[in-house]
Image (tube, rainbow, N blue to C red; front, side, top):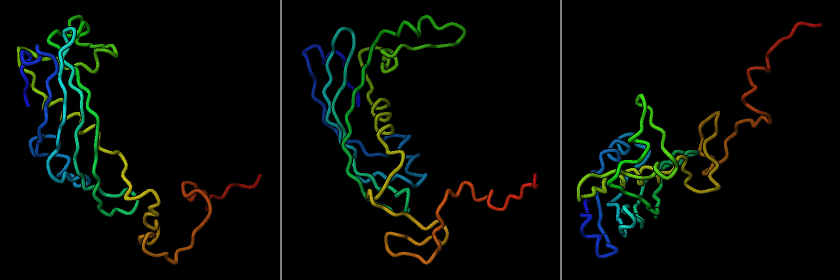
Length: 183
């Protein structure tokens, strides 16, 4: 998706469009891994406006994901709605202009700014980044998911297993058989 900066001289520009996940190269790679599958298109509803040398793009996107639960490993579908906020500038940041020995230090204000040349702004890379950042790090099919038994692998959401539950911290199991010399 590209917008012309000349179109923004009139004020605000409303943008509504959908992208198939395959149109974003990084999302295709994520789908290959298998933990996240994009179901259907990603629908964007955005507003772009030009203020003080910046082009600000705000709005949201909606998508449907098929995820794997981190506890029980079952797949489940999730509808998601995520806010988008991007800033574009034609002028390189002061930090980029004054980079010494290849070292670049950005201020907090400059860190979120995307540089573009000419009159055309390509939103694809910035939007792809927003979609990737919105993906959950750890997913649960439901808050009360009991997961799998660590000893026999039974799904504890479906039935209880007969494994003996020991109280204690499993990280210290190796120390149970430690023999120390008598003092």
